[in-house]
Image (cartoon, rainbow, N blue to C red; front, side, top):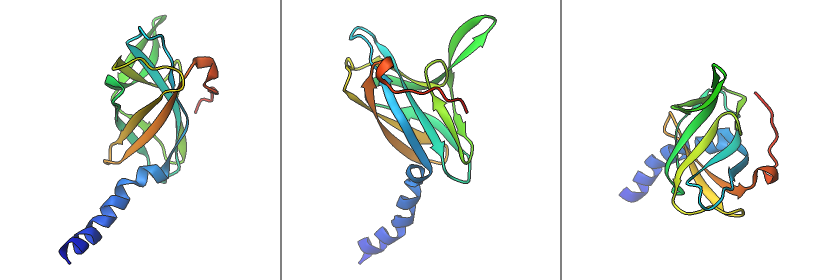
Length: 151
């Protein structure tokens, strides 16, 4: 009887941890195909927050690379540089783009070459403890079907 009661007590917590999957929708996920000698690549997607509260991504993880980080591209004094992001906020009922030349996911120190048609698993980690897995197909830039919408 005790395992049953424990399961009943844990059920609301399990439902809560999956909330990100309901409130946050991923569109057009992809990872850039790079030559086998390239140690790094980037990933892109569009995130919709359908919830009534702001969502904050505080981390990303993947087994595909030694390090996985959120980055953005910044233009300053005529130079373009890449800078790490420690969090990305998605306002309620809004969306954020991870796209070439802007916010993106860096896969640093690829553990094996990624070829077109492979899939990369990425886990988004939210400030409230929720996680959201994403399966990202590896594509060439021109085949990604990526549209440049800015929000």
